[in-house]
Amino acid sequence: MGWAIVVGIVALIAGGAAIGMPMLLREHAEARRVALGGVDFSRLKDGKYVGEYAGGMYKWRANKVQVEVSSGKVTDIKPLGESGVVKPDAHQAAIYPRVIEAQSLEVDMVSGATLTCKAYLKAVEDALKRAQG
Image: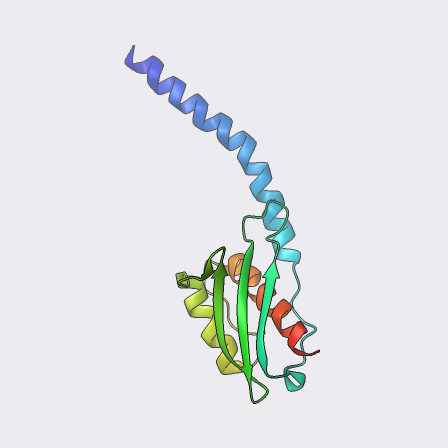
């Protein structure tokens, strides 16, 4: 009886992997192709701008940010949730200060979280495109 349960659990895990793995691989391939660019940091207008990234094929990395520009420089980036500003996760807490310091989207990604960081940067890029006018 015990072996039957173990075999059943293994079969469920294998079945889930067989279904989920192709989805994950397609989503990762799409995320790797996401390009950043098109923002001229010398043309930013002061204000607060909201940017979003749809999160790719399966919406796993959807996110929204508010970017503040003051004196033509990015001074603050806050992640937004359904009810307003939310506490940044560890990757956001690492990547957003890098953008502010570099005044660029071309910053080092968090090791092991490149695709997630690219998604966060796409939302920042969207906000900054609005800041260019």
